[in-house]
Length: 292
Ligand SMILES: Nc1nc2c(ncn2[C@@H]2O[C@H](COP(=O)(O)OP(=O)(O)OP(=O)(O)O)[C@@H](O)[C@H]2O)c(=O)[nH]1
Ligand SMILES: [Mg+2]
Ligand SMILES: [Zn+2]
Image (cartoon, rainbow, N blue to C red; front, top):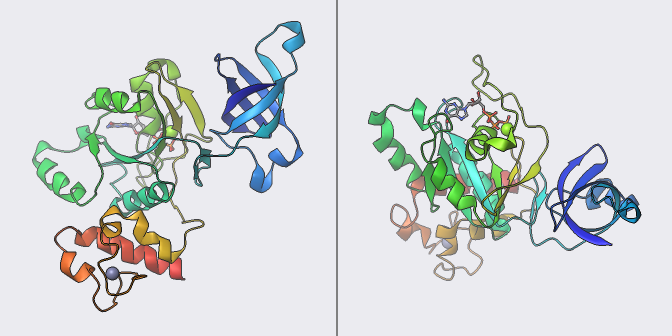
């Protein structure tokens, strides 16, 4: 038996990479194939290589067991990452600020650090930079600006990927795969033009794949989405996924304050100070969505 990591899952087959870097195309035992307990990218598994006897290290295998997940991102399903990088383009498609909060909530729920990457800076006239800084300022997360066209900011992005496993998440067409190709040309990931008519990506990346990087890190390139619904999130848990609201814990009149319209809610004091109105709007919007 060997231990390895699922780096790709497609059509009932799982590519598993062992500690030595050899890859095995595996099938999985019954319950691990489909449904709730299905294997996903990032899973640590115990598998058996069918080619071991012949001394061929790369070949087919069978996954026997999945080890407990340290964390789990539902959309697309990815397990055991160390950080989430929210990728947005500034133009083509336009930046979806609320989507940044949405993805961040998913990450916070799993206790994962968030980094925001604003891509396609080459499409923004320098005069608009100040306005951009203002728009991103409400988010309590580190931000890097990149252009996969000019390469600006990509060295910093690469250094942020070193030594850990990151998941890239963001809408289709924002440049996730293009950025990774710039950082490590050998990856040769497929990229696709953004539709001129609707200004959206065309869902070029179809499956999540875990890619080893030459700086000791690894990254999961994921398919972009147009919608992202919360899963397994209770309204009472939402405030804990907004660091600036979590910081108010214990300061409201009610211990289980939902920070909506309760009397003696600390939000009334902090709104416009430590709590940015835009982020609070996102919170209230998500709250409504979760209460439906
Ligand atoms: N001008 C400009 N275009 C970029 C940049 N990054 C990516 N693009 C273009 O944006 C389009 C979409 O890029 P992809 O890398 O396929 O986007 P993606 O986020 O991987 O999209 P999905 O795989 O569909 O989720 C391609 O035509 C890229 O050439 C950038 O920094 N500047
Ligand atoms: Mg892609
Ligand atoms: Zn409150």
